[in-house]
Image (cartoon, rainbow, N blue to C red; front, side):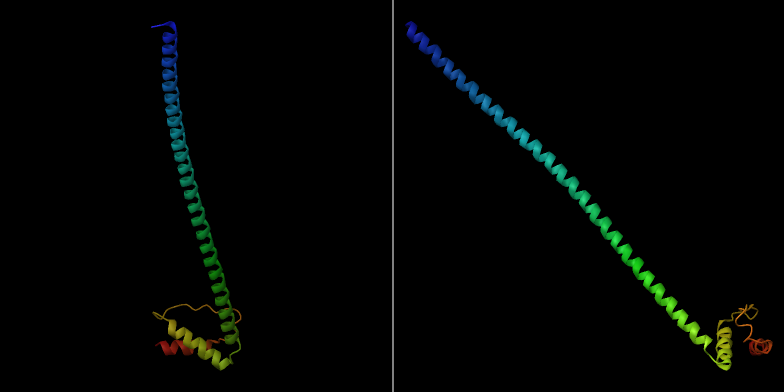
Length: 143
């Protein structure tokens, strides 16, 4: 073999070796890229999962707060209605004639007596309307 042939052989072997090195480097680069993409996808999925969990918790919290606020509003409205009804009932009771008032109070007392030795407390505004004879009438009916 001549020097030129040896030289050509060395150059040819070097090219083959260089092509192998380049192919191996490209494979390594592709593998690194794939691993990087896979790692990035894993990180992205973890972030998305975490954000979805947080969003779900926030949504649940907002819904719970809204439901509680709605219940609170309903309770306040019910309380207003009850206060209004009691106010109107009291107003109606106060407008009763003495005869109707005595009948109402007497029925109220008799319907709510359980054993017969209850104590009845009379408010200062009712003391003018309820006399000793009225109490005695009730006591007679209990016997």
